[in-house]
Length: 463
Ligand code: SAM
Image (cartoon, rainbow, N blue to C red; front, top):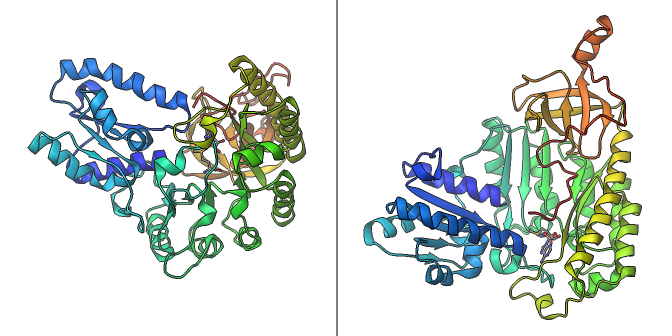
C-alpha cells in the first residue's frame, strides 16, 4: 500500500512537470513516505529527517515534505518540532499534493493536511506512475474498521472507504491493455470490500476482474480471517486467474492472546478456514503475520503459536516482536516480557519456520512452475521471478530474460526462501550436451540459498 502511495506521488508530480532526481542533493523536492506500524519504522523516519536538516542548510531552496502514516499520526506537531520540514501530508490527502506545493512555493505557507473524506476514496487512477507494465496494484478499499488492540492502522489510514466495483474493473481493464499480466487488489482488510452502490463483495470483484481477457494472475491482500466468507473461498477456486496463494494474518496461535488482541476469531476457527481453503484450492500457498511477545503472552501461549505454525505449515511468515503504538488499547497494558526474551522467542519461531519452508520448497523439486520474471536475483547472476504461488524462483543459467516474461521452470532445488530451476528449453539443451557449464554442481549441504529481494518467506522484525 505504501509502495502504491509512492507511485501516486510520482504520478501526481509528473503531471506538474516534475522529473525524478538522481540524488537528494540534486532534488528541489524531497518527500518522505513514512510507516508507523512499528516503533522502529517510525524512529527511522526521525533519523532520516534529522539527516536531511544538514542538506536543507546547504540547499535552503529544497522543499521537504513528510507524508504517509507518521504524517497522519503526528500532524501539526511535526511542523512544531521540526523547523526544516515544509509540509505534512496525511495518507488520506495524497491528491492535495499539487495544491500544497503551490501554497509552499507561492504563499510561503507550512501546510498540514491530514484527515479523511469519510464516504469516498479520492484516487486518480490515471495519475499513478506505474513502475513496470506487467504487474500492478489497485486499491479497492482504504482504511480499517477493525480495532485490534496492538494496531495503529485505523488511526493512520482512517475508517473503511470503498471504491465502486465498476471503477476497479475499468482500471484493471486499462492496465491489462497497457500490458499488465498480474493484478493485485489492495486493502487493509481487502475482503471487507463492498461496492457502496450495489453491495457487491470481493467474491463478485474476483469474478469480474478475473474474467478480463489477457489477465494471467489475480491476487488480493490483506485478508482478515473474520471476513473470509464461503462465497470468497468458492470465488477463488472458480476463477482461473486467481493464484493459489493467500496472505492470511493469524497473529497468534493462542486463544487467550487472540482475545486480548481483539482479533475476533479463535484458533479453531482459523484452522477451520485453512481446511476449507485447502479443500477448495489445491496447492494453496498460505502466508501469515505473527506477533510474538504481545503483553501477557505466556510460555504456553507462545508454544501454541509454534504448534499452529507446525500444523498449518505456512509457505511464508512475517514475524515481528510486539511494538507498543500510540493510542492503541494495548499501550496501557503492563508489558512484562523483556526485549531479550522477546528476541529469543522471535528467533525460535524463525528457526522453526525456516525448517518448514525448507521442507515445503524441497517438496517442489521436480515440479514445473510458471514463473513471471521480475529481474535478476540478489547476486545478479540469474533471472528471477515469482511462481503463481508467489515463491521466488531463480532460473539457473538465464540472465537475460526481460521482466514480464512468463516461462515454465522445472524446479531442481528448494531452499528456505527460494527455488532454483531451469527453463524447459534449457532442460532439452542439457540433455543433448551433458557438459553444459550452466550447472549447479554443489552438494545440498554446501550450496548457498541464492535468495532474492524480499522473498515471500522472509521473516523479519526489522521493517
Ligand atoms: N490489516 C492487516 C491485518 O490486520 O491483518 C495487517 C496490517 S499491518 C500493516 C501488518 C502487520 O504488522 C500485522 O499483521 C501485524 O502482524 C504487524 N503489526 C501491526 N501492529 C503491530 C505492533 N504494534 N507490533 C508488532 N507488529 C505489528
